[in-house]
Length: 91
Image 1 (tube, rainbow, N blue to C red):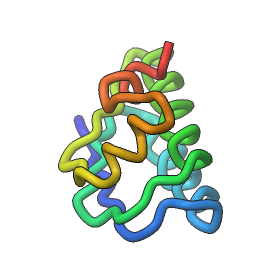
Image 2 (image 1 turned 180 degrees about the vertical axis):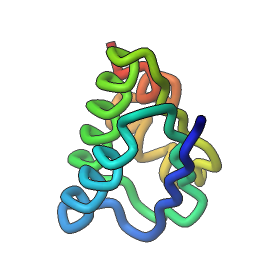
Image 3 (image 1 turned 60 degrees about the horizontal axis):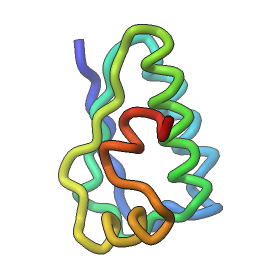
């Protein structure tokens, strides 16, 4: 079963604890993170997504990103990561 986690707004230092909590609550299966409403992605939240993807893969599950706004994708690329690299746990 895949659980969808919709996110919105600025994913920055103030959002990382809630993001971590939401991802931990969904660690029992596949997770699809819907970034439709995200306006900014900070490094700590990006790191949190990478860690969650790595943990999911270790448990035989998958974390997927969907509906990535161009601005957010550009921010990820500026930090050296593509959506695929994030989903794979940035090996």
